[in-house]
Image (cartoon, rainbow, N blue to C red; front, side, top):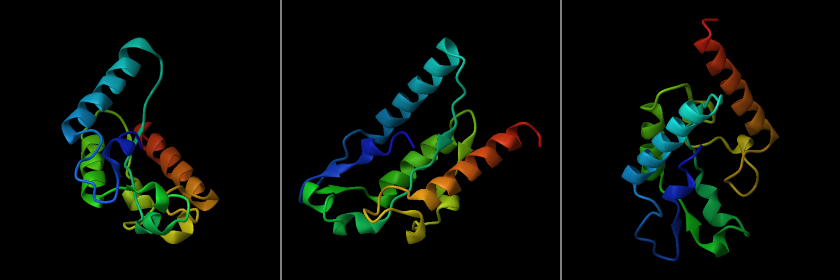
Length: 131
C-alpha cells in the first residue's frame, strides 16, 4: 500500500496532498526498479483503501489527517499499471471498506482485515505461478 501516505492531507482546510500523483508514480517505479535490479526481492503491490470514519476517531481526528478517495483511487491506478502482481484491496476490503475489517480508528485493518489481505495476497501470488 505504498503511496497512501503521500496523498495524505493535513490541517483544517487542506488544499494540497503531500506528494503529487506524478511524483508518487515516479517514487513507486524507482522502488520497483531498485528491488528488481539490486535485490532478489519480489514486490507485490496492494491498492490503498480508506474509510470515512477516520475523521471521527478520537486519536486521529485532532491530528487533522485525511485522505480523499479520489487521490487514493489515483494511487490504486498507478499501482495497477505497474509491472508485477497487484492485489486490489478495494475488491477485497470492499469500497467503501467494510467496517468489520477495520480497527475502531477507521484506518488500520483489524485481525479479520489482515487475514483477508493475507488470503488475497497468497491467491494473487498463486495465480502468477499458473495454479
